[in-house]
Image 1 (tube, one colour):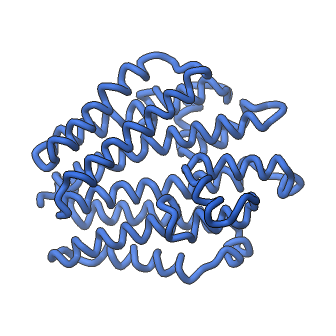
Image 2: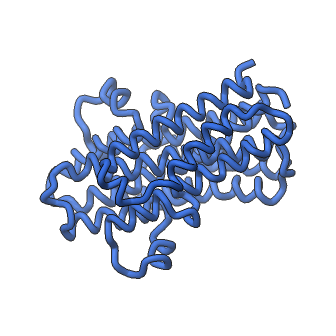
Length: 312
């Protein structure tokens, strides 16, 4: 497979995952802001920081406000991580690799763009926000369903999955970090009812509330939630699950005659997660652990791009 085609497929599915993840991050920010009795607007600084667009936001806006932050995350084309930017970039990548996709995958991507583009042409009101966020998640799921149901399990499929899980692992890490490190900087809040409500919001933001209760019961405990989202290999958005899937897809490419450089890094990251437990993470510091993971997964993505010559 040509590197340009591999890169187009990889980035198509990274952008689609990013659009969904940004919608999830907005949902988490909105729910957490609602738990604040005062200065809810200030919480959006942490959300923008988690999305790594704080500086870009401040280049256009002087203060952190709920409506401008949500608009920047959903619609602003100057923000390359906004949902609107991501679906446009995803469709552009799909057009360049259209012959590598099944008709069903292409149509799902194109319909995603056709539905969301007019939806995001104007500012989204707070009353409309839940429905809009739900539609974004739904359209991303339609593309994933077409991929699983119609694509051969070949190189194209594996690059699509690698892109998905690199982006998803990064996002789960950022959502955990924004909760523990930025939203609750004062130890006095830890363990309070407010703290527990916010942790439950984090579960909802990664569609893990039902799975968590199935695994742990009705009690919401921050330590168990962190353990679940980092180390539970059954949870499809956990760091371990994503890292394991990246390794499986890279191993397929390696078995097909490609190098093992990226696979070695992926396997080392997976071993780190397998050999670590939540007690060790808490002792080290959750923020420090998550930051190291985010940096490593980002470096792995860059290594994959170089190894498979996405840019020629």
